[in-house]
Amino acid sequence: MTIKETRAYKYAKWCCRQSNKKVGKYVKLQAKAWLKIADGKHNTAYVSEKSVNKIGNLLKLIVHPDLMCPMYDGIEDYAWFLIVAVFCTRRREDNRRFYTTALLEICRKNFKTFNSAVIFIIGMLTEPRFSRFFSVAPDYKLSSELRLAVRKIIKVSPLLADRFKINRDMITCLLNDIEYMPLAYSNDGMDGRLANIFLADEAGALDSYPVEAMRSSQITIRNKLGIIISTQYPNDNNVMIDEVDIAKKILDGLLPEKEDVFALLYEPDDEITKEWETNDFVIYQSNPVAVNNPEIFKSIKDLRTMAILYENKRENFLCKHCNIMYKGLGVEGFVDIQKVQKCKRQEDDAWWAGRRVWLGLDLSQTDDNTAVAMVTEEDGVFYAKVWGFVPRDRIGFKTNKENVDYAKLIKSGCCFSCGDEVIDYGAVENFIFALEIEYEVEIMQCGYDRYNAISTVQKLESQEIECVEIKQHSSVLHMPTKLLKESILSGHFCYDENRLLEINFQNARCTEDTNLNKYVNKKKSAGKVDMVVALINALYLCQQEVLYGHMDFVVQTT
Image (cartoon, rainbow, N blue to C red; front, side, top):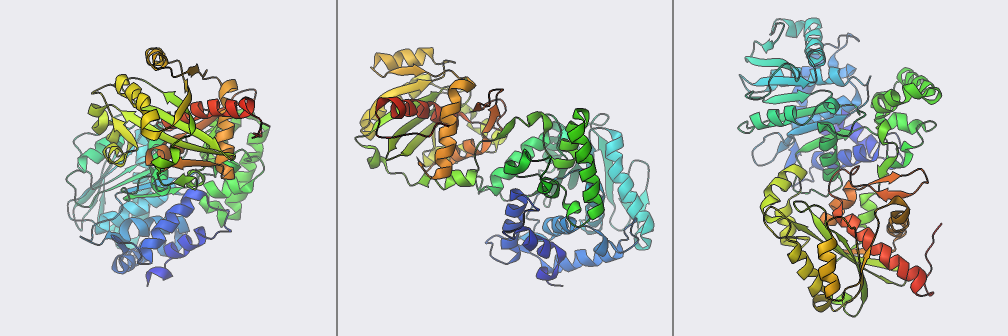
């Protein structure tokens, strides 16, 4: 069987159809990225046809316990895609597994635990001798569900039954002495385990410790794999949120150096999330099994009807059957990063000479990022240049925590290191003082958030830079936030090339107050947004000048 004949390849091609609205943006992006590898167009990875046929033959030997047919015919299309991608995508240089993390965000009743069991059985039949497998979950009951699913499949498969030993706390493959043990976060310590392959189930109910402990155990493993699976949970502090955020940055092209994550994120696109009561594509995009199973689709629609009628059923339906965080319905992504990137232009410092500019400042906390934005307007287009500042001695820590290569970004000129453990505000102030000379611009005003800014503002004003406090209230920030988004979408915004600014845009989340005012909320955002906040502060001042300073340019305000 060739790669293009597999259900995995055909499913990926189906996902990528431009007219296909039954899969969301990020599933399409992952399918597109993998197809590049499968078609032999990737420099460092390929899909092994030998491995594809090996996996296919194994799936023919394994029996589906509910359908009583070969697993080859019984598993879902998305499961085929996941299995082939994980086990058959290889590095050209040494033939090791290309993906070291497999991330599956999927709703209930899409057979996620069952398909994880299939993956574990394949792994136990193909990995090197004496490998160790672990599953981690919030409690023992959840952790045992995977063990029970593995046991069930083994028991109904005649060719497997005699080749596995099943105990209460462990399953052993007798062919190669590979052991699988379920662990419960509530009962078991995670440190000291040596996991060739691990699975974190219901990761939305876990903090970062179990996953980090498993990954730490894999440092010396040559061919490691971590599988992280969950539905959405109604909280904003769990390891799944972090993993999804990293995966989205990879798929959006913001972390080009990190390609070892395979992510199937079955969640509805932002633009249809608020249409969950009426738009069936919300169901399809979060429930791949419902696409080809009318009974499951009808069952989910029935649950939707009840969630519309009864408030107390809404949270469970949206979280578990639509992958929408109910408590975050008032929170949305600011603007599609791909739309932002269309506004990028090459740096041309000479272009700024002779222009009037408005500055925005976000000083943040002393041990965190600080940002300075410079904005001007010409012929109805807003132009921006933004810089970031990070504490020098925290670069390594921040790189690991945020999955952002700050050293590389500093080298590219996106940001600067200053201070040791804390930001050197003096360096930021001197940077601002030098802007007029370095770029030959005229600074009209500098907008700032009062937090941590009083001392810096006094120094700026002593050098005759007019500073304007911008209250960080929704009623104040709504207009510049709206203007920035509309300018991006209409092509009336340009920014000097800056990878860190793009990451900030991807992190940004908007909150809507009771008066329908929207603003970028630092607390609700997925990571650092200081550069976007500084940009909005600068744009606020520029907007005031455009609106009230002269009349040859009109801004749409409604």
